[in-house]
Image 1 (cartoon, protein in one colour):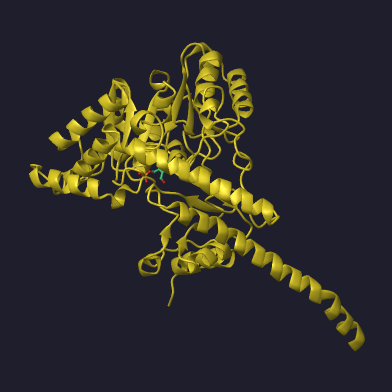
Image 2 (cartoon, rainbow, N blue to C red):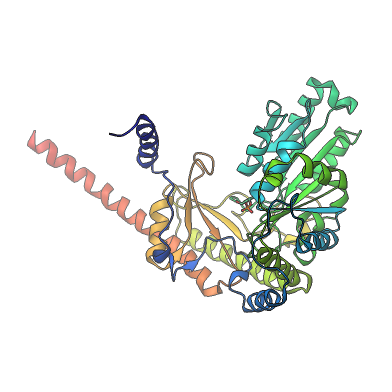
Length: 446
Ligand SMILES: Cc1ncc(COP(=O)(O)O)c(C=O)c1O
């Protein structure tokens, strides 16, 4: 006999099935051999013979490789401390603190740093882990959102909060703004310099803090892949930066770069750091090797090729969509990508990040699953992303490009998307052309 718990869980899953939003693990065998347009392995480092060789040779001589023995507070391995020192130095930060994942790092930071009376302001597209952190913090009832990347909306929220909460004007309470430098689902870039300036202007007592999640920008942007904060020279004007190792760096784990005080506080209060076994030694070795490739300029070469590939894909797709007059409900690009940039992207960096080539390209469609299935049948793995991962009405194929994709592969992807759209148009025309005929038949039977 099934329990009431089984019945409730089963009903929830069936409801997701009916709404076609049930999440499932893909079949690893079915994915084999497909062209990768979906992983976050942007620099293709997971297949890099150079990284593999470095990793194996460092493993060979590492004094310890298995496990880590416990939480950092129980066992603080030499390798862990040395990696933190290296990362603090590389990123130009007072300190660095390792976490087992970016998820743990965001939860760890946001659950403990905001104090009673403080407020947290989130970009509406911020990662789920930040929400989870804030939800379990002492500012859980004081979280606000602003429209994605919209400075006007952020300004409105800040002014309203300053008006309603005198402690923010006096400097007694703090205000945290959380953004991603490169947004994971949209490939949009936060206007970091403008946000910092706004915080410094509206909260002149220095109690407005920016926290930047660089998960998807790590290895891709900035000097030697140090991220957008470093690219804009904002290292000393943000409170904390998060870099993750599981995406372009082909490892796992994450680091928070911040002040000595905040690091010490997290060591005492951050539960996702304190109550978990730290990264294994082998994992530390792998991350160390990835940073070798950032430091020696390899990653820079890979990312520059990757970003050229992104521009090529977009140019191809835009041209094909225009030539074949594809309606927006079948395929469309977000506003920041719908037209080629009027000026060289780099020239736009100083005033506002209107456009920066990115490895993440959302292609909106009202039929993400059939389109993804069509691409899969053609040997390409590009995943559908639907609500609740993205807002309702913003269903898409999230195209992720990689250093290892060829120009031909990205052209094929663009062609296949447009071919699919043209088939849909053709089928719709056939249905429309049959309709009057059927109506006549129905009428003649009456
Ligand atoms: C913006 C952002 N932050 C944090 C994370 C979590 O990082 P990790 O995969 O290392 O847990 C992710 C990954 O999904 C992400 O996209």
